[in-house]
Amino acid sequence: MATVVSMGSLSSLLLPSRLSHNNSQDRFLLLKTTASRFIPQTIKNAFAATRIRASSTLLVETKPDTILDEKKLDSCKNTLACPICYTPLIYTADSSFPADSAARPNLRCRTCRKAYSGNDTHLDLTITSGSKGYGEAMPASTELFRFPFVSFLYERGWRQSFSIWGGFPGPEKEFELIKDYLNPVLGGTIVDASCGSGMFSRLFAKSGLFSLVVALDFSEAMLRQCSEFINQEENFPKEKIILVRADISRLPFASGTVDAVHAGAALHCWPSPSVAVAEISRVLRPGGMFVATTYILDGLFSYIPLVRPLRQNVAQVSGSHVFLSNKELEDLCTACGLVDAKVTRNRMFVMICATKPK
Ligand SMILES: C[S@@+](CC[C@H](N)C(=O)[O-])C[C@H]1O[C@@H](n2cnc3c(N)ncnc32)[C@H](O)[C@@H]1O
Image (cartoon, rainbow, N blue to C red):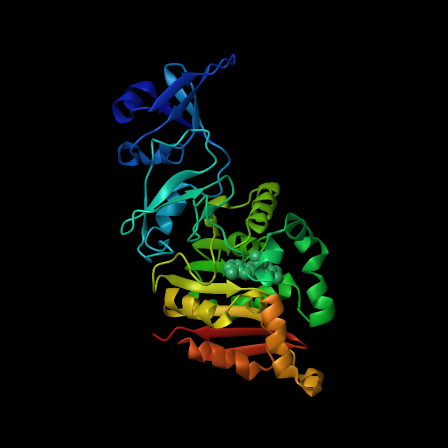
């Protein structure tokens, strides 16, 4: 991506905090910009680290962008929120950051002033984003997906195996079912919660059925893989998608601002499905819709003695919650303030859709 800026207009608008010569023949200069309010729209997405050709006109080269496009951030400006205070985030630039730093603050909370940064693939909107001295482990069902070999294998056999053992119809058929359920909210913003390597996020973006797709996952490895798949596809509508790292239990969106949330094959991986669905309910606007798939162990499984207490032990060890009936899943949605739950089943596979009351 390249943006041409005239030297005259640039010097009156920008105060480069660091301008240094690159030795290459092309005479590239490294520019780090300052306060973004002085920067015109067209070059805002180049403000963190840009290479500028020294001549009467400046050629500002930016990296192929999936995350920090100003237009994209603009389109979800009242939606993206601080995961600590839930206040909408504002777009800023911080001149104290080195231009070549991987972490560059671009969004800031109006209330707690915390800055949130992005790297080349995603914005990090977890509570611990930016912290260096603190780390905590999540349950195994969350941590498993952070391993790069899992994100590599996920769309190379792992996800396909769900159809064999669980009756998942597969991405195309699942996408058709999702589209039918989400018909009333098409055209709005969709969050693909726990998107993994972005199998559905990519389908949502390419379908053109939504104004913006937020591909959200806790796993950096999954988001990197999602970004790689996006970059491999020709003519992918990158302007339609933003990749965000976040915890499902603390969604970085303002309350009542999201049109639809999809969560494919993820409910059973969440540390607390009720906290997660309550969060989803909080961020959905009135009339907004939640559609999710998971698996249910009923039928023959219900004859296994002590299946309920056993499930508690499985949850304690793996962090994975096993659903034992449709009713249980519907109850979960109702308990979290969602109504009108509808269910589609195929063997162990279940898709549930519920709505935030108007
Ligand atoms: C089985 S994959 C589902 C991927 C994709 N949605 C699909 O339909 O195939 C489950 C995903 O849930 C994510 N996940 C687990 N715990 C999470 C959490 N606490 N917050 C956000 N995502 C989480 C994992 O990183 C993983 O990508």
